[in-house]
Length: 176
Image 1 (tube, one colour):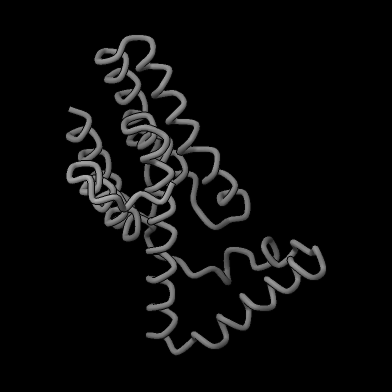
Image 2 (cartoon, helix red, strand yellow):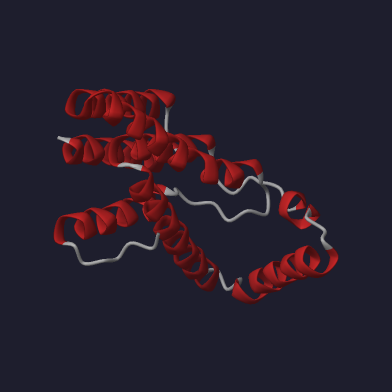
């Protein structure tokens, strides 16, 4: 049943993100509540507790990315719902793969727009400022106008699919 719930959540989130560049609260909050309820029914209070831990595991790391403007709030709440449904380890692995896939998509977009070299220079400058100078302003100074934007679900959907295949086949693709 959790696979059906997870698939429904991800499909609806993908459709709403692609159509409107946002994932509404009704999608994420319903997914999180349904995940907690499902785990409560199947595992009792221990299952509900595990679901809440999964929710926090999916939410907290991505909330840090939200604070610097790298992700939207809907994306963060989506990973909380994924954690509530499938557990914290599943959600964290999905997050890692989503970020890697998003990076590949971003590189592809930059190559297509012939902006790869200026983009890499900006990243190098930011890294030097952070590492050598301890200056974190480049993370916040870039602002929304300079951010490369695309629906994050383009990266989340294949990451969730990859982790679902891993769980069902035991191929061992988990990162964490």
